[in-house]
Image (tube, rainbow, N blue to C red; front, side):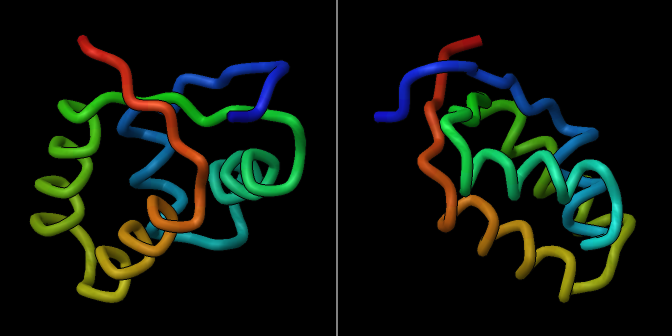
Length: 79
């Protein structure tokens, strides 16, 4: 597990990153992949994100969201 800064990623960060690779939310995920920054979220947030992406964005955004989760060392917390 990475040490250092822990960033809680709420639904808006995940959804924006899934919708656009050029925005600040995508940059936040990239920092979590590359730096000593730990991505933190919860199962409830991830379920909310999945539901919203399915309802509002294209299937490619949902696949990007799944790839983002898989590519991060993600700490899940209880909420």
